[in-house]
Image (cartoon, rainbow, N blue to C red; front, side, top):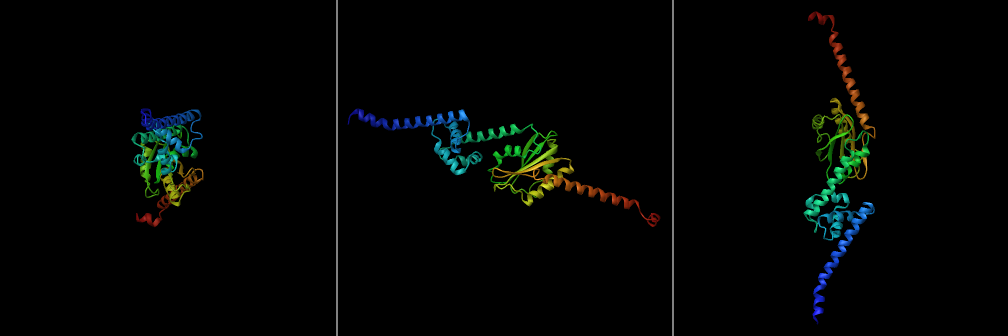
Length: 279
C-alpha cells in the first residue's frame, strides 16, 4: 500500500465529516433564503423548529432534533409551549437551543399583545382569540385570565388569576374586583381555555359568568365578554347573547329588590291607629 493510499484512507473520515458540514450549511442557507423570500409560507412545522434550533447551534444539523420535537409535542405550538426541561430531554437540544425556542415564543406573544394593546376590543372576540390562542391552546390545565380595560375599551393589563378547574368555587370574584380597582378598570373580559379542545361552555361556566357579572355590576364595572378558547375555535358569551341576558337578570333582581324595599317602607309608615295609640 502506498503512502498516497494511506493518506487517502486517513482523510476519508475527515472528508466525510466536511461533506456533512457543507451539506448542513447549505441546507440551513436554503431554509433562511426561503424564509427571507416568503416568510414561513410553505414551511413544515419541523422546518420552523429547525430554523429556531439553528440559532443556538449554527454549525450543526438540527433536522433530527426538530423532527423529534414535533413527534414528541405533536405541533409547532406544542413545541413552543413545552417546558424548558422537557425540551432539553431531546438528545441534541441543549440550553442554548431551548432558549432560542422560548425566546421566539415570548417575542410572538409580545407582538400579539402590542398588536391589540390600545385598540378598542369591545365585542371583538376574534381579536381576543387571536391575541391569546397562541399561548393558551396547548395548556394542559384550565387557566382563567382577566383582561382589564379603560373607558375607551383599551387593554390596561392581562392577568392570570386562577389555574385548574374553572368554577364558582375556584374563581374569586373578590380578587377580580380588587384587580379592577387596582388597575382603575372600567370593564372586564374573562378568558379561559378548555384543554379538551371543545370550547362549548359547561353549566359551571355559565353559572360562573353570571355570578361574575352580578358582582361586577354591583361595583358598576361592565363585563364585556367571556371567551372560551378551544382547538382553533372559541366560544363568546357576548356573541351568544349570554352577557346581555345575565345583565338583564341582574337588573330585574335589582328592581325587584327596590320594589320590595319600598313596600316595606310603606307598610312601616302606615301603622294602624291602635298601634299609634300604643306608641
